[in-house]
Image 1 (cartoon, chains in turn red, cyan, orange):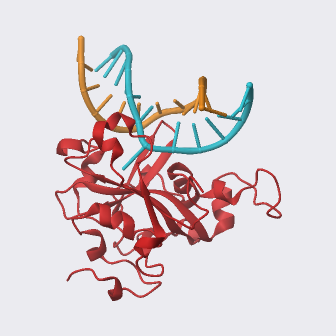
Image 2 (spheres, rainbow, N blue to C red):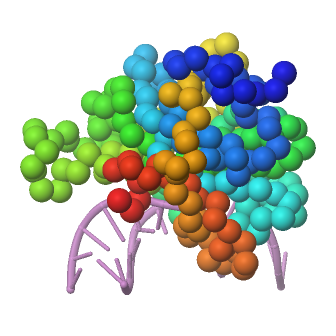
Image 3 (tube, rainbow, N blue to C red):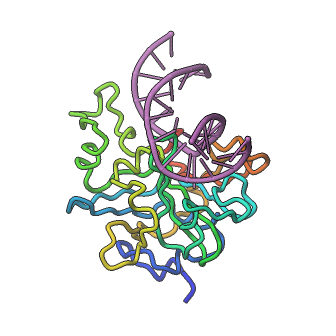
Length: 220
DNA sequence: CAAACGATCGGCT
DNA sequence: GCCGATCGTTTGC
């Protein structure tokens, strides 16, 4: 069965067919507007994906599995799409990626930002932030909750503990749901990926995507 | 075994 | 805009 946007109604889980497609750049675009869900602590926390980046072995120097090099850390990227790849960055930040493509191809999409929907209080607690009493409080910008790959992972309770977790196992605490279908091309902007200057010409590839009209992205 | 290096964040100037 | 924190992973000796 081939994935078709019309096959999945709003609120339903994204199926295996969505993730195992071979074009990770397209999947990165089509993850925009979808809903990331976790259910830790018996509490459902969700957010609309607003910013993503594609990473693709073997030709992408910025990808951890560049040249299809297998290590203990990157092995999960070679597994079948539809699971988490979470790794520790700078010794502090847990970065959550969605593994894509069939088994053997190491492709993944870094989730860079979400817009909180459900469980906002729990997210704030995980972030050690106090929710603003109103929108005018200086320094209380709600974006500090879930904008940035390290901060959204913390808000959602996602750590390296969950790397390899399938979105389809019966008791999984993490999965994705259809938001409102595939976002139109005109509502998406693209640019260079962040923090990959070391990757030579790959650093210039426009594989970062964000919702043009969202406040919940790094710039804007 | 030692050491360098991050797909970042937040505080400070 | 700049800079330090912080530690698992990876690679080199």
